[in-house]
Length: 70
Image 1 (cartoon, rainbow, N blue to C red):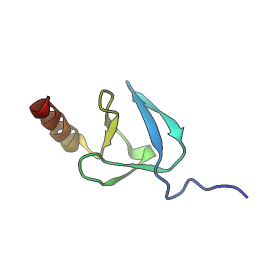
Image 2: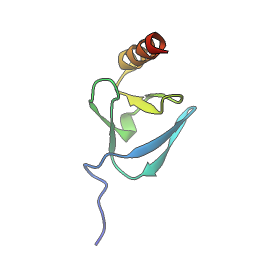
Image 3: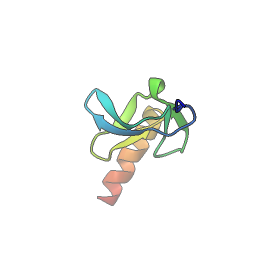
Image 4: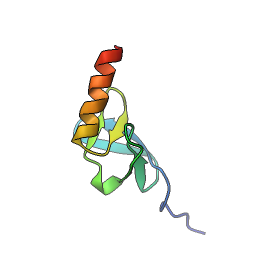
């Protein structure tokens, strides 16, 4: 029986300009908002923190939080 990757969270390794799929799935969850992001719509992530973001605002929010903590 074929396994479907629909409705499964993917595990990714984030690199400059791209990401590598470590565990198959069709989406990830935004590290800030918890929003579901389809892999084909994923545009923002942190290489250092290895986390995805739903949009630029969430990315900036995560960066500001990381700077305040570190």
